[in-house]
Length: 345
Image (cartoon, rainbow, N blue to C red; front, side):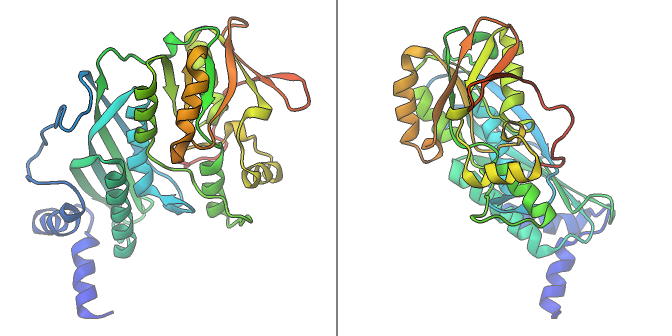
């Protein structure tokens, strides 16, 4: 290893408890060029309504921590996952993301190339979504205490005036729309973790849904609720909404989009696609009168081309999800108990 590479690594692979000049150099030389950090203060101004296309009524705030293992997986990595996941949490509230924070917990000795690759992915994901990262924090923990890298991202978004998405708005008669195929993220991470290969390969669906959501909300005001079915999969998300709304959600197995590779992998491994994590799809509850036109609008977006109406909301039995199976039967679908695939996000 040459002296230039060694000097570079000494700047980035900080020791536990690093501070002062070492941390100062790391932030200025490695982080700042990749982010939208302009002033090195302990807080950042929130650009409320900056470049917003519609009047906003209130702010929403979210935070999430990412501990996915492995850090790199087919279709993404912990960097893109952390940005997309936080943007999607804001989008499900009907909020346009204004800005994000980035918190890094780095294990002492973490490879420079891997860190730069992840930071590049963070920057690329934020730019693709049109969202700025305006503040952050970095901590270094002892070797063996951090599993490489953990990331926390928080986000602030502005909700359109008059919009209030909530499971409490879901009523009998609503159509249930799913924006894409399910199970891709969970299977991609599981395959990478265990050294499995599939033909064709299964890629994570990690993506920021803010563009798709904006198109949906611009098309109609008759969207009652939205959620992104991440941990616990589609089944857990639907069950949560059924309980919160006091309704029965009936879905049709033949209408739920699942890729052949994911279906085959789940059959091989004894997994139910309904319980496998997703990171780039949403489920929306909309007034039946707008379902057809909204579906057509969603299909115009690359992230919504596989959208489908997968069910309807019924009155009873309350707090229940019922699956109409491909063979004509019916079964109750419940939340995932425990973690089918741990460290998935």
